[in-house]
Structure formats: C-alpha cells, structure tokens
Amino acid sequence: MPIPYELTLGWRYTRSGRATRRNGFISFISAVSMLGIALGVAALIIVLSVMNGFQREVRDRMLGVVSHIEIYAASGGALPDTEGLRARLLAHPEVRGAAPFVSAQALAARGEDMKGVLVRGIDPALEPAVSDLQAAQAGWLQALVPGRFEVVLGRDLATALGVMPGEQVTLISPSGQVTPAGALPRLKQMRLAGLFSSGHYEYDSALVLMHVDDAARLFRLEGPSGMRVKLRDLHQARQVAAELQQELGGEFYVRDWTQQNRTWFAAVQVEKRMMFIILTLIVAVAAFNLVSTLVMTVTDKRADIAILRTLGASPGAIMRIFMVQGALVGVIGTFSGLLLGLAVAFNIDTLVPMIERALGASFLPKDIYLISRMPSDPQAADIWPVALISLALSLLATLYPSWRASRVHPVEALRHE
Image (tube, rainbow, N blue to C red):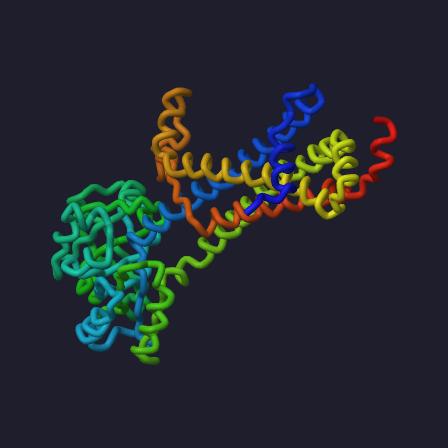
C-alpha cells in the first residue's frame, strides 16, 4: 500500500534543514520546540510521581496507626458480642484482621508537664493483625498485661513529658467521680512499659496505648468501644465498608480511613491538581512554539507549495503536509519526554543520592523531615493524561500555520522566483 505523499513531504520537511542557512535556522527552532515539549512532559511526570510518592509514604505511615475500617456501636456505648462481631468480620474475603479497642481523650501528666492525649486500649495478642507499629515488632506491646496498668507512649510524647521506660506517668480521665465538693477527674498512675514510633508526628506526639481491659476500667466502660479492621487492599476500604454496613445493619456504624482523613487527602488532591495545571502551561508554551516554527517553514516553502498546487495538490493536501510536520515534532517530543520522565521517576531513589553526594547537600535532612528519602510512585492515571494533553496541544498548534499554507496562491508565490 503506497504511503500518502503528504506524510512523505511532512517527514522530509521535519528532518530537512542542512541545505541552507535559513533552513538550518528553522530546523534549529523545530528542535528547540521538540526539546521544550520533551522537558515539559518529563518535568510533569517526575513532579506528579514524587507527589504520589510522598502521598503514599504519609498514607502508609498514617495507616500504621489509623485503621482501614473502624466499627462502632450505633448507640455510642460498648460493642455488643465482641467475639461474635469479630468472627463475622473475619468471614469477609477482604478482611485480613480485626481487633477490639477502646478510644478516649485524656490528659497525660509528668510533674508539671501536662498534655492532651488520645488513649487507645488494645488487645496485644490481636493488635499486630491490624497495626504496623514498630512497637508491635519490638515486642513492647506484649508487656501490656491486664490489671498492671502499663502504657506505651509515642516517642515524641515521651520526650515532651520527659519520661523514660520504667518511670511513672499519670493519666487524668475526664469521666471523674462525683463528690460533695463536685465532680473530680480520675487520676491513675501508669508505668511506662515502652515506646513506639509510627513515623507520623500527629500520632507519635499524642497517642497512648494500654490494654483494652485497663482502658475500659479507667474510662468506666462495659467493654471495647469499637473494632479495628485491616483489609487485604486498602484501596477497597470504601467499598468494603459499604458492604459491612449493609451486612451488620443499623446496630453498628462503619467508618473507613478515607472518611477519617478526608481533609488531608482533599488538600493533597487540590495541590496535585494545581501543580498539574501549572506544569501543563509549560508544555503548552513549548507546544505553541510550533506556531512560529511552522509559520517560518511555510514562508520558506512558498515556492514548493506553489509547485505542488500547479501539479494538482489541493489546499487540503497542503494543509495536511504541514500538520504532519508539526504533529511529528509533537509526537517525538512527547514520547521523548515520556521516556525521560519515566526513567527518572523509576530511578529517583538512585539519582537523588548521587546528586546529593555531588553537591555535598541533603535535600531531605533526617533531623528536619520525617521522610528522609525522595519517594516516587509513577501512576498510569497521571501519565496517560500528560501524554494525551501534550499531543493535543501540539496538534492544535499546527492548525493556523497549516491553514495559512493552504491559502498560498501559486501565482503570487512564483511571481518573484
């Protein structure tokens, strides 16, 4: 099957430019436009991949403490039939683990230092099935024995209170005792059994772990106030939560992790969307450099256009020739940018340390940032829109110069030749 001559001429015009000085200048501008598109696409892919990487790191660290799904009694009290509920949850194919817990607000005090904390009562035997805390791996949670009233604190919280493992810390419960002098808060001396680190400052500085039975006695509850659930795929949390809510009925309230951290994830998505728009403008500037390149090419090829028209080429064919030229520049630039961006995004954990050693600097110092390495997570949902938008902008930039080429009159073009 013969190749249409529009494609042949368009490709020849794209790679021509060594014969004359003027053609060489036009070819140089075309190469610059191609390079600009490639760098814009690569920058967009790299930035979005790094943002995805940071979002994944923060999410994973957050979900080391926060449950994929939490289930509460609709009445707001203790869960009825905790063991039966846990058995029903584990029967779901997407549920990996389930553990009861107690959650309440309190004050932690050590001498004159006092801080508001979130107390979570856990079952040490079941907690590793729903948590990724380093404390669980280190064995500190196994020291939580019911009746001994021992606690495990986040490292930042322990530092703020100035308490070390083996020392005493006081928990002050708002559900106090009523006396003739008025309501008095309940105070309980606790022994610090160990420390945990989740990598997330919000929890390391405010979370207190203790045995679920001790927590129920401290806050005067009849049993666990909720059930933590871990899924095989955290991205299915919303769907699984809806299925569990329908299965359990109105007696229980089911909440997934996307509801617990809705504000943070919404802010990340807005930031990512704005960055996408800003970097897309860079691609648009590079793509529309094709307009000036093709306009100069049309001016330089007026005699060729006139000869083609006298040989029977239609205005539409002339327009397609220059659209092919511009489209080729856009396609080559876009796919070069895709290759460059993906190469950097998939190897950023190797490239960044090399750059840091060469410059003698650290982009993410460990003593300042919780994440000391540059994460990257390229996702097809981000890459394909970048490629399609770049190709669309490049094709759009060819319309006016190609239309102008189709309007060249053969007599006027050959008058001064």
